[in-house]
Image: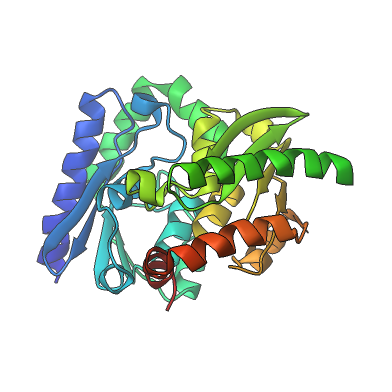
Length: 152
Length: 152
């Protein structure tokens, strides 16, 4: 099980690195149903001026019009703890399991996910933290813009 | 105050009608800051095969990269009660006030919004219900596809 998590988290990290190459925020995600990657995506705040295309949202969007019965078999792998928007989407589509790379850089409403029956696994991976921390150190203004947008 | 709500709800209804003309689900929304419409949008499930562009999401996306201080002055007008995804987004960006056209056709997690300090106003407008109910009567399969996706 742990090995399988690593396999798909690597795909989420690949997405984070694609975003970095596009000069975007390096957060990535993949949606997996029975060993099949149904969707993949990354944060597009900077690439598309998008305030809704967080990695998880981009990934779910790219999965297309899945059926409800499919979402209920999926695991969402994301390099960072999901925010309120992404958590709401996970709950809307009843995605039962979320594997995150880390929650040190930013932590979403994990209790809210758990209360709604979502199984949460935090892999606490240095690689995910380092990619994002390096971006933040090099682009403090862009990161502060995002933090101002979503925090008190 | 009530007259102002009607003025902007009319704009949200215009968006719902634009969606209908595009053969889409007739749900619309506008985001208003100090009498200025910062964004407008409508459901794009059918037009774009989008599972994330609910009216509220499309509207917030179209508003662009607003600052956090701006979202905190906004009211979101939507023809239908916001779902879990849209509610999570409202909470993420701390939009303090939501005016909805109705919540009979579908009702989102209104308690969750209220618990998070969002002021909710339900205008309970027949016009919003009728537009959506007519669509559902004419397109039961499309509507049932969406309901299967988001409900148990």
